[in-house]
Image 1 (tube, rainbow, N blue to C red):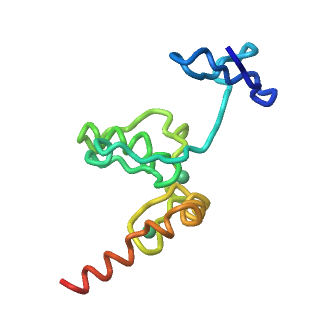
Image 2: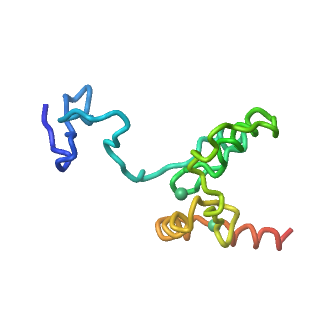
Amino acid sequence: MSSGDGGGQGFAVVTVDDDVGRGLFATRTFSSGETILTETPVVSCQHAWNASYGYSACHLCLAPLETAEQNARRLSDNPGILLPNSECCQTRPNFHVECESCPVKYCSDQCRREAWDRFHKTLCYGGCVASRSKRF
Ligand SMILES: [Zn+2]
Ligand SMILES: [Zn+2]
């Protein structure tokens, strides 16, 4: 086994062997609910099944773009459901924004700007949709 420390974060990256590979191992006791590690994925996308059922997520961080109550209503096909403690839901629709050129949605302007700088300025299909609609 070999290891590298997690920068004093309470974990270590350990290579067990060639068959098992590497993993994170705790080097101290963590409290329930304590965040151990946060990282930005290199690549991420919503599962096609979720999208086909109308689940809306931020194009960058995949945060839900519907409240828990909206989610329960959509999944149950019951628009009258009222969830208790709706104030605990962390979805903030008033912060949601769209790409200026296509219908891709983000949880915040910060995510929209970060996505634009990292990949969306290359992958945005807004110009393609506009030119395609002109041809037909
Ligand atoms: Zn986001
Ligand atoms: Zn776009």
